[in-house]
Image (cartoon, rainbow, N blue to C red; front, side, top):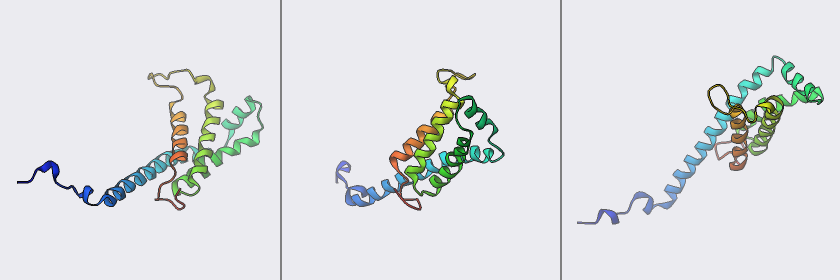
Length: 149
């Protein structure tokens, strides 16, 4: 009778199969992260197609030129679309993250140390978007992309 602890597993016999499965799982996770983060941001960008009045008011209050409001379209529409298809993913993610940093500073600067009515951090959603975008920039698109990085 053979010792079960010494039996070969499928992964022990073919290490490339295990590596391939791990790679597929990692690339699937990268795709899911890209789709979730960028897909959810698209809703915000599409809403801005109705107008940029709120953004322009924030810029005016900060003494910044109003034309900068159009950067929202880059950060909330173009960059997420690039992230979704996986084209220039790292650059698009950094643009996205910068957009969120500006949104945090201009739109939520007074809430940096505040909690919301449920006890959560008042800026948790924009911060989550920003940090997820930085993470995507660091890990790249994975192979399920138009231009894998």
